[in-house]
Image 1 (tube, rainbow, N blue to C red):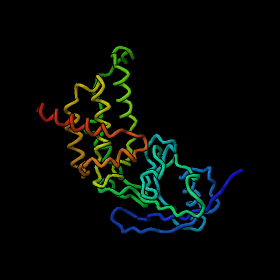
Image 2 (image 1 turned 180 degrees about the vertical axis):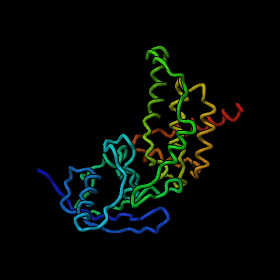
Image 3 (image 1 turned 90 degrees about the vertical axis):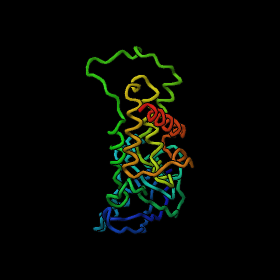
Image 4 (image 1 turned 90 degrees about the horizontal axis):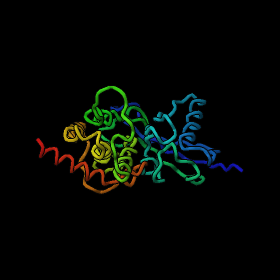
Length: 251
């Protein structure tokens, strides 16, 4: 038997990056506990459209926890109160009837608000472009077993590569640091043979770009790893620091 709840929503509304914003309160009734959080927002927007009001702007794409677009700050937590999932994987059964849910965009100088709950995360793209890749000549792909890699190393590299670039680490950090994101991207290449040639240049370039874009410094509070929907480990920050120091000595 389907169970439904009624919820009150406090949502941040802002028309643009330089416009003042404010919280507005809405009510959504008869929300199925089997629906996702984004489906509940779809219901709200349908109500607003039916009333002739502007719908709430929020980012989303795959709705499968892969793309990292659904970046919402829910009740004081990036992606909501449940660990290890993105906003689109959060279901309404995690809330109670007549709950008041506060929904905000990411709060970071490097992620300006586009409108309402949607922010511009282009800063992450610029960091990736600075060095988050490997260069190689075009041609036939190598056999998968031509470069032997131990399972232990492959597992750690994969743990780093699970980062989806959603920005929850930046939103959770009191300093607005992107060290976990950059650490994950540097680590996934530093651990594998394909990333060795550009290893030093990559660490220098990505850290430099991160600093240029206005992200804060890491003070090891660990909030980033605690709120990461993909459970990217904090050890990536330590590895990033080691890679950067070694790169500076190599200059």
